[in-house]
Length: 79
Image (cartoon, rainbow, N blue to C red; front, top):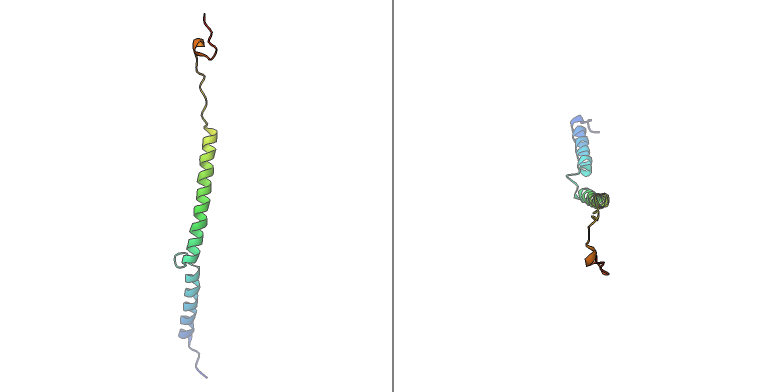
């Protein structure tokens, strides 16, 4: 039976925790990062489009009331 090596167990535990950290890390996993960036870009595109449409709706163009001479109408009126 081998003696209980504490340093070896600590190193093994450290390597396991490091692997778990790298698996969950955003910068280390391109699969997680690409999915996150994809959904983030879809959400940003949707919000920017919705915000632009809302702004156009609230600041819509108002037709000015233009005075037209009566002599230039389809059925002109003369004095």
